[in-house]
Image (cartoon, rainbow, N blue to C red; front, side, top):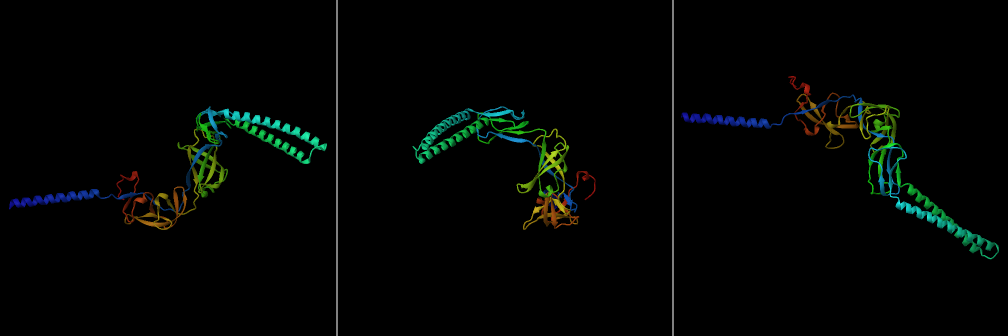
Amino acid sequence: MQVNTLHSVAGSLLLASALCACGGEAASTAAPMRAVKLETVSGAPSTQLRYSAVVRQRERADLAFEAGGRVKAILVDVGSRVRKGQLLARLDTEAPGQRAIQASANVGAAAAQLREREAQMRQQQAMFDDGALAQSTLATARTALETAQAQLQVAISERELAARAQRLTVLRAPFDASVVARLMQPQAEAAPGQAVLQLEGAGQAQAVALLPPAQAALLRPGATVEAHDSAGRAWLLRTEAIGSRLESGAAVQLIFTFETQPSGLRSGENLLLDLPAAAPAGLSVPMAAVLPAAQGAGGTVFVYQAADAKVRQRQVRLGGIDGERIRVTAGLVAGEQVVAAGAAFLADGQKVTPYQGASRLNDGVQR
């Protein structure tokens, strides 16, 4: 009887251990409550927006041989500084030289032909004046003379074109510049108009930006804006020109000049422009907070309910985009809290916990 009792207690202990183990495993696999970053919806728009601009030089050129041909030599490389008029590259001149010789010979032949026709015309005219030649024969001689005159003009034009082709077998710097790209190598065949070298001037830096039309409308030529480079340095820019058409159907090109010489900035470097917000007063949320609506236009956001610590998905009507924010025209009221990021990973009615900054992790306050 005592043995049976011991067996029963042991079995109970084993069963309790198994249940505890199962409970621990279930607890360990339970999904943790998701922390979300919240933003309180406000009616005040942001005071500044940031857009990217690219530094470039005012004077730029892609140099190419007009007629094309085999590249004989390229006398500069990337980084070379060149002076206006300096020889940069040349083509093989054998074929253009032969064409020039042929064109000159054609001019000589056409000139000789014209002299012969002029002599014949004088002879025919004298015979016609003496009554020994018919009118039709004189007309034929005059036509032959006019044809010879036209052929000489054609030959002279071809000679000028051949001489021009000879001159275009070399590339010279159109202004003081630096070589920023070398696109071909010697002995390569250059097609007509194919770029061989890219040049940029120096000392006339610009910044070029593509802005939404509403943002561009806030600027006028002569207006100043501030920009920052990757090192955090501030630069004062002046609006020089505003494009009159849309680039890629959605943006306006603006060109800015530097108020002071931008030492240390290279062409192609990015700047961040600090511009006034184009949006009128109204509600707005981060673009990352909005999900596309399942049906119809607009989108959805997750609104945080503090009473039960859950998020509820709500459809909203959307307005224009301002930088990284989007205006909400219906569906939200000022003071509500929305999930500002990671909305795609949430479900309607999911329980969440507001994300707390690192400074509050150990403050001992239960939230």
